Image (cartoon, rainbow, N blue to C red; front, side, top):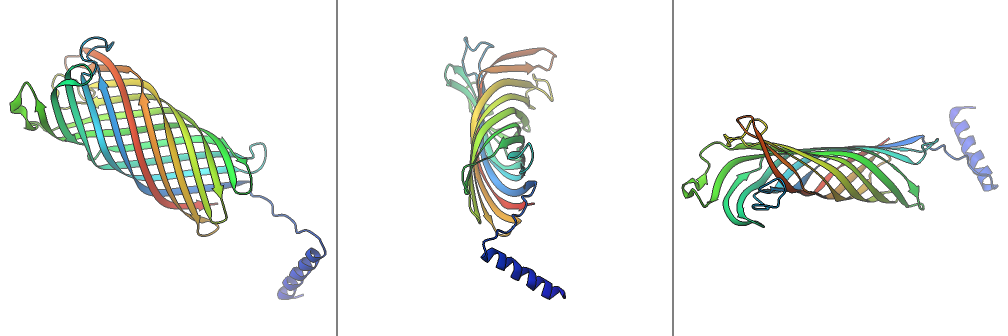
Length: 319
């Protein structure tokens, strides 16, 4: 029998059996599904920290010095992968990795010092640029997928995460100086200070998926538990050591929300858009200062807060 005749006969036989009530053999489910996503986007972030005048925060100004990095504008690259296991003892388990990196195209830093409690009697304030700051993040985790019906699924998730911000201060200008008014205006020296942060810890959350043939919508809610560490180099302070002028340690927590939408354009490719928001905050911690003469000092780190909102657009490959 020629190939065309054989193919026609196979189709005719299958149609005849189905019309007689027979069922077609089910296609075997793939052992796993792999999704790889990459995209570009923007993220806006604000970081703030303050220290007290002494290690207990009980005497002197309770906010002696405060740094605010506001409206940090990052151009960010995102990449992620997700492996869903369909067979065996790990069936319905989901493993995932996420990575992001970005550079700041704008942002302002305010450094204020106070003589009174609760941010009163401000005697010094300077402004500088945070442009050319950067951020990086890595997350690895797993979840277990519960299929509710044909279109809905819930996935409890847990992950390890590490996020960092390498924040710079350049182009400084003094806008308040109660003791030395002649210092107002551009800094006499070249400001090039850095504040490198690291947030590391875990998060647990829940993802809801709504899926149709062409569209997928996902909402993920997260709770974070983080350890915080930062190192700074205040390059214009001759009384501080360099390149490490002081360090910060604290623990904290926070929340996060992720929203994503995918439009399937073929069996293997989708267009993807995502929006996310994070809010982290530490409790009181330790501020340790390293002086140029080799001695150390310190005070109470009151708190550190980081809040960011971002979006990205990209493509997703499904294998």
